[in-house]
Image (tube, rainbow, N blue to C red; front, side, top):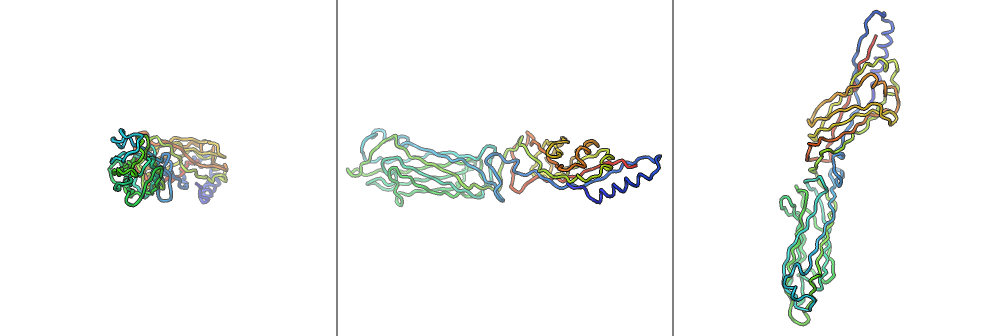
Length: 353
């Protein structure tokens, strides 16, 4: 924010000319407008933990999730065979596990993501290729909990892949882009055929053994996110004010004025804020102001002559501000390229004469 050199010269000439005016001539208040540099409130201030800007998109954290089921839970007929060598019974089982975006994110436009999956067979037999039997399958399906839309699926076919005792299989699931809610559901479906009855086909049955699935989402990128911004703290990017060489003769004649802020607000939420002017990092002027939820608005922050004299003519002057989004703001959709743009002007009234 830099006062015009032309403006300063004009004011100085006016003051010099005023020295030749007879003392009975009345004083005149003259209004001057100084353009200021623009500053912003970035979208990053509105993002909850676990969401950050990544180029032209947001990167969103989703915690790893896991589930397990015991053989006893999946195979009712196995209970009577527990701790015996027996032909493997036929059974089918389906179970689910949930995962969610971080708190305050209720949805997003998914651009790309993948899930690294590790499936561990802690049974003492191959559940999808039992000895002496036909082949089964293990299917993992990830869906959007809000709409039920399938986002990805991985199938382990016993006709193609063996899944022996104490073995871990790894798979990468690529997710389909599009609108999603705040949480996901992974469904695990195991179709396990019966094994043979020949002595060489018998397997150990232990109902406490289990099947485990661990999933780690990675590189979750979204084009936009629906986030709750209520009471979120925001910061006005600092702007250096080059006012150190202003003449004391000018500064002493300032009667008062205002900092006028023209605001472009794409978020549609209001902010209660404080404008702060610092000298050498120490605050010398603090004033309250509000940003409306309108797309375009203007607000005027009044300053007295003493307020101006607290920083004009000093070096190391900066203008900044902090604020809090309205408690009633609720959830809004944000994009990485959005920011509040603030254009400032200093409106001064000087006494000449």
